Image (cartoon, rainbow, N blue to C red):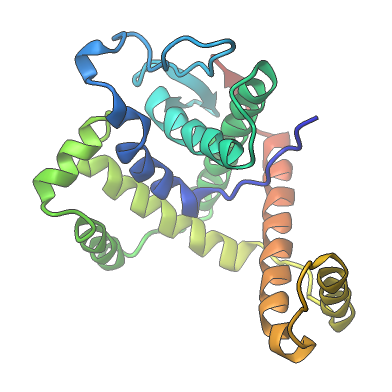
Length: 239
């Protein structure tokens, strides 16, 4: 049975959208696609992708569209594929469930951040947007890539703004448990036991292990906060 993936939320969402510009959307001309859906060619049990402007979920009155859902779902599908899982009924259902979890989790965090008065630094937004443009040969090339997924440059600027809000919120509102020396040692011992090759000395790996555990605890704290926020949120799934 497939395990649920602990998938990072808002900081990754922008990358998911950009990733979609160069993956499956690129493999087929737009005119050959069903205008009402973004599905792949039919298979034994295909993952369904809604139309880009279709409302997939509503969170406290705020609509999330198919183009955002599709970007997240494609990345999840790719992650499963790299683990050796083909497209089946089970994987399709897991992709849908996890994509919706990412979108709802993003939204409740961002809504709470807005209620608490967090605002993005527009100078930083502009800097990140320029960095983003630098990943393409030209702004026109970036626009063409975005067009394949139904996004615009303004959409990406909005995503960057949300990314900054999310980062501020997590830094100030979410407190992760401390990583103990015992946990670091246990993680190292576990690595040594399972490694097929001779493991580096503990001192060489200590900092890396500690950082990894810190990130895990932060993500766990984020998940806990999301669950708290969802308790009072009105979520209506449309797909």
